[in-house]
Image (cartoon, rainbow, N blue to C red; front, side, top):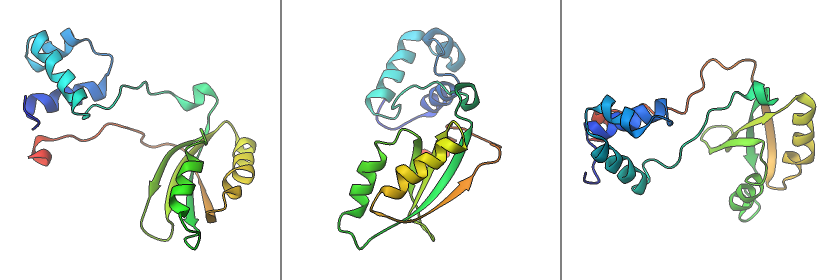
Length: 160
C-alpha cells in the first residue's frame, strides 16, 4: 500500500470506525482479504497516523456526567500571547472535552461535561471565568443529544 488510500483502505477505516474491537480475522473476511495483508494495511494506516487511536464510546449518563454545555468564548486579544496561554490553561481542565477556534461572533467553542448544574457553576465561576485571557463567555445548555458520532464520512471520491 502506498501512502495514497484505496478502496480497501477506506473499507477498513469505515469498519474500524463502526467497531474498533473487530478482530483482524473478522475484518479480513468483511473486506475480502486474507488476515496477513489486512493486518499489514491496518498497521500501515496506524504508522501513517491516519488511525490515531482506538476508543470506547461511553454513555455520559451512565457515568454521572449528564450535563453537557457548549461555551462560546471571546478572548482578550490585547493580552500578548492570549491564545497560547488560554490553550495551555484549558488543556488542564478535564471537563472540557472539545475546543475549537471558530469564526463569527466568538473566538472559541468548547464542549463541557459535568455531573450536574452545581458542578458546571463551580467550573464556570472558579475556573473558566478566572482565566485572564477570557474577555467574555456565553453558555449554551444542551437539552438533549439528537446525534453524537465521531465517525468520519470517509469516501474514496473525497480523497482522490
